[in-house]
Amino acid sequence: MENDVIEIDVQKELVSAHGRMTLTIKVKLLGGELVVLFGESGAGKTTLLRMISGLTNPDRGILKVGNSVWFDSDAGINKPPQERNIGFVFQDYALFPNMSVFNNVAYGQTQGDKCYVNELLQKFGLEELSARKPDKLSGGQRQRVALARALARKPDFLLLDEPLSALDGDIRTSLQNEILKAHGINNATTLLVSHDLTEVFRLAHKVLQIKNGTITGMGKPDQLFLNNQISGKVQITGSIVKIQKQDAFYLLTVVTGMNQILKVTAFQNDIEKLSEGDRVMVFSKAFSPLILKM
Ligand SMILES: Nc1ncnc2c1ncn2[C@@H]1O[C@H](COP(=O)(O)OP(=O)(O)OP(=O)(O)O)[C@@H](O)[C@H]1O
Image (cartoon, rainbow, N blue to C red; front, side, top):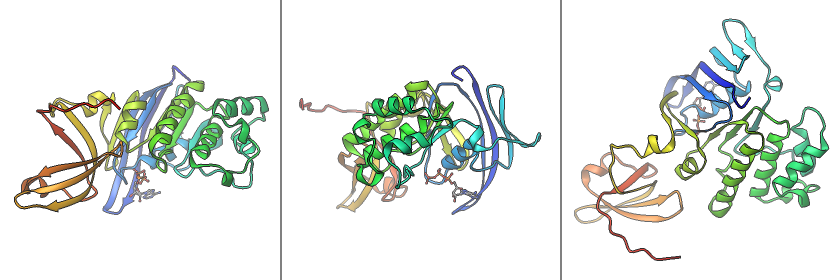
């Protein structure tokens, strides 16, 4: 699998809040890559993961992993999800509430291999919790169980749909390390959906930027986000949480991915394009900061 090329060339008509949209994805991924799908809400990221997993059918196209054809609309091929050897982690983890940690992880397997389940529990620091039910776990622990379960069948493909969206701060950073660990365990080609630029820079070998159902950019995070159009020495991304009018200008409150709050001045012509909730990049060409060691 590590050297297998994954060929995705699929289309699907979707109905978004703004009308019809054709999800059109044509891309080749290298086996073993960790690819982040980055794009705004409704761009089609989850639908792409569902099409790869077999939970949603493309209207037409081809999905090929090495020499194995998973979907081919012309040839009438459509492998069911259980034959695709994928591991999937959803936003809400979807653990079985009535099963112990051990059984949740073991459920991911096609053939019972208790040794491997124990190995995964140990790798994710879950050994002590193996008899517990999910409602007695923290969010971060549940997320680790979900990752271990997704790995239990030694998948060729690991599909992670914003698995950290419910977490923040240190736990988020530490679970990003768990994702790197999960990817390293059998080098499964990993597709991770994320809105978080910090996550993109920490995890991605490659980024696929998706907008309105099509790929608008692809490359290493540096190539995609630190492009030459903006030559600012400092670039910070975040979301506008408040826009306040002062005398002759506006004051924006921007919360960054690191949960820092920035106050930024803006003028009428900036404000015409901006609303509260927008994601923005704040950059400055001249910057002479004071640096305090923490
Ligand atoms: N089976 C379907 N048929 C028609 N439209 C669909 C179907 N599934 C999803 N959609 C629509 O397609 C659009 C893309 O949905 P999708 O969940 O793939 O977006 P997303 O990029 O994952 O968004 P988010 O980041 O909010 O999870 C949405 O507007 C959704 O309502």
